[in-house]
Image (cartoon, rainbow, N blue to C red; front, side):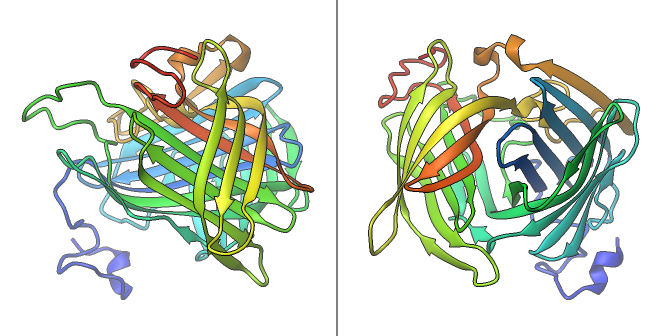
Length: 359
């Protein structure tokens, strides 16, 4: 089936854009954004995904203010037009590719509205390709980019202005195959429960942006890692680095209570960054791991819903996937960003002996 996207010189297969290159149910194409003022007092996250082989399109906007996390989310049947980027009240618009994107949340029954413009501070950083076999569970590309935000957010009519001199953030774009659509019920079941030790930390400073990400096996060996030191526009540059981490975990949880990250460029001194966590943003508010609103799940033809979480009352061991909003220091530099972690299963370095043991 032909769609407007087919008029652009962007084809990668002999088929129309509406038909992706694989029949794998887990193929996806996705936006993610976050934003925060320099003191970290508020936080918002945005997720939007297409799942062409599942026929599902979903999106969510979630914001933390005064210890409460509010979410509005939407899901619908995906049509053939891959350039359609709206679900319910949530829309993403590419204003200038790789430089400016707009996120809007129209008035809805769940009290969360927004009109926000992301303006890139750094080059987009293409991370090493993700590929995991046995059977294939990951085969995708992802890029991370830092930026500033302008516009506004309103919760129950109470409006917060968002100005670029005060608000920073980051975004990622990823596409390919990962377990968004669930495991294929055919075939042999796994011998053991899966383990996953995922870390991702995009940080903003006045004169630098940094990216740290590492995924490890239970013995601490890396199966994926990347680090970058980026200077902002107008003279944007990127230096790729080796990475290392020293983490402390809050007792009784798998949430990070402090972190020391090291970015080692090919030449010169390492950049050492320390993080001071402020609070934890629950990724389930954007659909990650939610039993009903998980990514690619069929919810209905055109469904809009909302949720509220009291962060002080949430059980950390029932929320293993979080982004920890943190103040950052690198020498004399002061910055802000997030430390995202998923710690499932054993990990020797940090003393996690089995799938469920807390620190």
